[in-house]
Structure formats: C-alpha cells, structure tokens
Amino acid sequence: MSSETATVTPAVGLIGFSEVGQAFAAGLSAAGATVRASDLRADDPELIASADRLGVTLTGHAAEAGRDADIVISAVTAGAALPVAAAAAGWLRPGQVYLDVNSNGPVDKQACAAAIAPSGAAFVEAAIMSPVAPHGHRVPMLLAGPEAAATAELLNSLGLNATVAGEAFGAASAAKMCRSIVMKGIEAIVVESMLAARAWDVDDLVLASLAETYPGIEWPARAGYLFTRVMGHGRRRAEELREAAEVVREAGHAGTMAAAIADLQDWAADQMTGTPLPETTDYRALADTLAAAQHSSGD
Image (cartoon, rainbow, N blue to C red; front, side, top):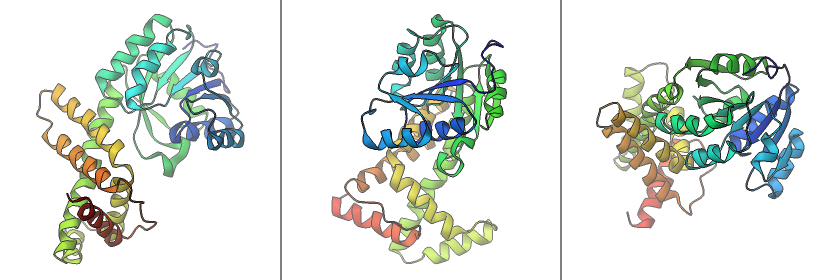
C-alpha cells in the first residue's frame, strides 16, 4: 500500500452489504471515510434504507463501488469469494488494497490472492474472530499478507480492531478455522447434551455438575446462547466447519471432530426449516422447540 493511499479518511468500497458490510460501513462512515457499497440486492428496500441511514452510496455493481476506492473490502459468502476476487481483478489497480474478510480456509485465501495479483493491487486476508453483532465494526480481526501491517495500522486509525497474524497468505484464516473447531464444537456438544438431558429430565443436574467443574460460567445462560447460535445460524456454521475440517486434513490429520460438528450444525438447520426461532434465551424452551421440530419432521 503506497503512502499516497494511507490517508486518515480513505475512500472505501464494500462488496457485499449484509451484516458484516453494514457493520464496517457504520464504523468507517463515522470515522469520516467515504463509503460506497455494492450488493446483488441493491434494489432491496431494506438495504436501501440501511445505506441511507449510514450515509453510504449503494450500487449493484462492484466496480462502481470499488474502482475509485483506496480500500476494497470483500464481504460476501464463502462460495462467492473467489469469483468476486477474479472479477475484481479486472478493475482493480496498483495502490489499492483488496481486503478479503470472507470465511474461507487458507487454500481459498491463497487462491483469491493469486486472482488479485495481476491487477497490481495489494491483497490482504482478514479473518473475523468473533460474532459481529456484539462488536460491530470493532469486531476483532486477524490480517495476513505482505501489506497486513500497514493495512492494520490504517484500519485501526479508523476505529477498527485489526491484529497482524503474519505475512503468509492463509495464516489468519487458519487461526480462525482452528478456533472455530473449539467454539462451534462447544455449541454442538452443549446442544446434543441438553437435548438428551431434557429427555431424561436431568438437565439441571448436568449443568450443576458442569458449574462445579468449570466455575465462573453461568451454564444455563450460556446454554441458551449456544442454542440460539446453532438453531439460528446452523447452516452457515456447518459450512465454516467443513472448511475447518479441510484445514485439518491439509495439515495431515483426519478432521473427524470438525466434520462431526458440521453434521450436527446442519442437522439443527434441517430441523428448524420452517420453524421460527423462539424469542427467548431459555435453553429449556429452545431445546424443547428443537426436539419438537425433530419429531414433527420424522427424524
């Protein structure tokens, strides 16, 4: 990234204007950056309203959002990351930074970097290390790539929360995927445990025992939160865990646990199809809803 582009209030182009894109837009706009966003649903009234509220120019074309930007942030689905990067290489130019915040594994990030390289723009991978909702634009991120340090400095000056993982493409996403095995594995274990415990009416005993073994955790509240994550976002979480399983296999190991966690997350998403998520954080009500959905589906 050249010194000319390392301005205090750069122009930012967003590719993707869903939860992540809007969170970044809110923080960057508040910091004084000019933000243009693109989304395939640019004619959606809700997206238009969000763009107006945030002071963001919204378009349906990525090139319109990013061609004149200092930093282009790709915040799309994992499956779209590489095609979007390949298309962006056609209009990116030297001096720009292409920041990929998508939930892909290291090999995919390396492929995106290779796709961007002919444009002369700097590719920086980013791994979002926590749910966006509680943090907004301050969500912790790991950056990797030769320009990661300079990009982190600029982003942090704008109120973001970036830490450098290293210069090798793939380092940030590898850290995220390995963390996800633990975090989403805990979700899967608690959901499966509580479903069985509720069936035997021993959930209070199980949680009380866990509280003795792991004091300091409010287990009933934590269980409720974990149920909401699995029941509300299981499909996306399963997709990420299958990426994580591939990371484990690429490291020469079986990936057994990551694959099993993905299966449970997918299973929960299947059961919840057509069933609204209850507006509660009570693990009992959530577990009973999931169990009832399973019985009604015949699984």
